[in-house]
Image (cartoon, rainbow, N blue to C red; front, side):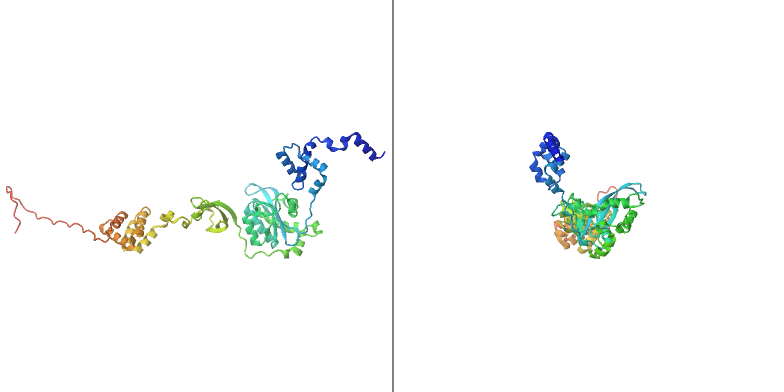
Length: 464
């Protein structure tokens, strides 16, 4: 008997050895969801299907059992989901793929602090030429600064940037309409590049930058000592040119990436802008009742009509700009820490006391007349800060009574010896500022002395 004959006999005698389904006690439970699994397979991963069956349908099987069931029951669909479409070769200067990769731990010898070091990597897929920059912080400033250094390293910019969906680059990932971070969009606009993020959780969308990460870690990072971050970044540039740029690259037929870049891709990159890019940090803030927002460690004032609104803040080393719905509403000189306030941002009635300084009061009094100038000068002669409100009150009478009547009232108050706000206002209310000032009472002449004789009841005669 041949082997096929024995296989037929065994299949009939011992069916559990020939049919795997008979040995799987959980597969009958999975069979109940066959249509649901078949519908999702190829759209999402088997792990996601398992999670949905567990959470939404109460299926209590392992993900490994589900994978075995899919391979045995739906072999065609399983193979279909594993198909990978090879990407066409990228044209020179068309694209740059960008990502972060973890390098390892580093102890700063100067401070003794331990840091996690990440590598910002940009690869040009056509020539495989790469730029690597170690960083400590994965914030917006490091992301933007690394792009600027990469463009300087390549001597130009590609037409399209393909980053990961990091918050420093993409605010809201979406397959068709991703929302790009404001700072990143400003960078792309300045250099004339299009930001085209890869799909979320799809590393195969940027394979040229995913594959070199282990190479960078092994060839450059491990086993080296660095005294500072600046030295680390300088040596990374040297390594990109002297080592990674001159390696034999199999996808290029053994050619060196630097040679291919110089021969084919360098001249196809877009030229760098004439003006350097200004590194800016974007943030959002809510305007409080004190009409100030906080950017970094500093408070900046904005127009009072924006109270309660959420505004966008663009901070550079020189200026801080505030935008409301894309419109620039305020600009301040940057301050590292403290407060910057423009009194013009307050309502006029709220800031009137602060605006009407002693100098302002003296200037306004000079427009009224000499008497008013004398009154204001007297009020502000001693303790000007505490008597400022009285001086403001005197000048405030101009609105109701005019300069002529106020000047006359001040003259009369000086004449009577009481140049105060209460007296001047009383004169104006009574309308007596044009009346002549009352004359001071005359002093009585002294009476002559005389001698009264004792015993006489008549007064003495006046002298002849």
